[in-house]
Image (cartoon, rainbow, N blue to C red; front, side):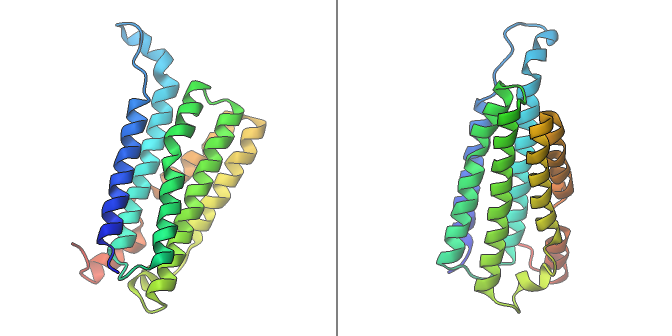
Length: 196
């Protein structure tokens, strides 16, 4: 099976996730810039979550661009990823409304950990489907970055028990680490003329 339908479906779900997040933003009650102060937690939560959804969309696109075929296992792994990402508007809204309190930060961290784990499972499912000599296997020779992300998510969850805002720092660090699209994939795509 080719990847086209999988990509199109995933793109649609991610677009809906972003739409839901922006609809959750509350406008200021007043008419002055000073009235925006109450909206700062919401805007920060939205910004972090938007960046995360963008990171997943970008890297998912690059991963599927070099994936040669998919099977049922890949489809289910992709659905698990989309499920975990679809919870981001919910955990983001709780994070914002509770002004980054402990339990919402922990829930947000668990959501990010689940999404990271699901992306790792998706990558492994594609690798198993495409085989050891596939483009994916040749492009991603190490999964240290993926594993480090999971460790940082777990660290953030642990730190949130001590100080919630301290727990957010590793989440931001992971986002910064992945902000630039996966250079392993981009380099491989460019070297092998696989760009669309």
